[in-house]
Length: 340
Image (cartoon, rainbow, N blue to C red; front, side):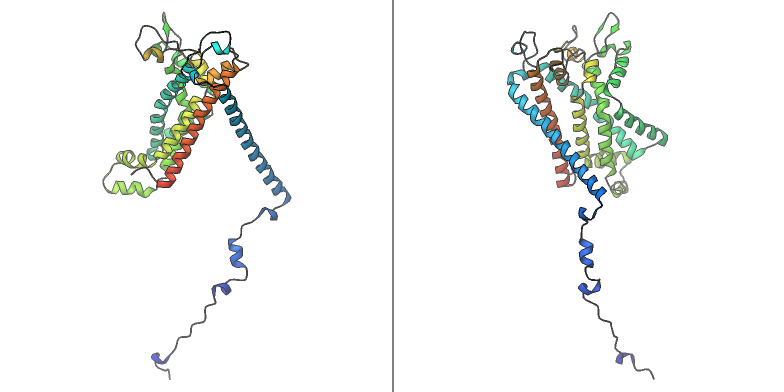
């Protein structure tokens, strides 16, 4: 006869304490980190080589920066920044490099003004639309190819384009002959140098946005274009700013395109007969990179002191851009997004 249910008792086996549920040492093994002491001799030698190469790279970078800073501070004088180059027998008589400094600002402005909106548009199309698929693949391959093309090849290609009579209004011309050298021409080709960096950075930012953000926008009646303009692009502002600053660094550091398409004169050579600022933008000029090249001991000017001073100014500009990129990333990690 089965006893009533209320008189039955349920026996539950005891649960072992956490320190007895697993074999001895299991918790220590779970949190343990493998050390290099257990590696084979070949792996340890490889690790040592990696450490050595990393330290060597850091040492070379620090040596370049410190050396240029020492030499630049020694020879840089404030008046060099607002005194144009002049003819003379000694370095003290040949003025400064104000035209080169201003020329760097001009080509950087033209180049980034062309590359930034174009790069953003290409990245948005590749990530959010990508149709037709064949054209999207071709565009991706083209961007990668441009990133690997030497700048001197781009300079020669730009010479063919801007020497055309149809583009004579962008550079100096004489009796139907278009020279194809101007700030317009140099800035346009330098924008191609910065374009791959901008596209890659903006694509990374768009791909990092979760899918549900787009779906939430579509659910409240926003179109794809409105979602991209009002939500996606403001959210990836840090990546847009990073791409722009990296592109600027590439633009101000180029020399081949400047020499071929800007004329590489030490002073501005504006076009006569037209108003400001088109007379300067259509004319020839120089930048800091070309000035350093010409003023180096192996250059035509042979003014090493001014070469070090100009290189120091250029180095400060590059370091400022790198610092700005780091600030953007830190702020992005701190606030999460800039879309507020």
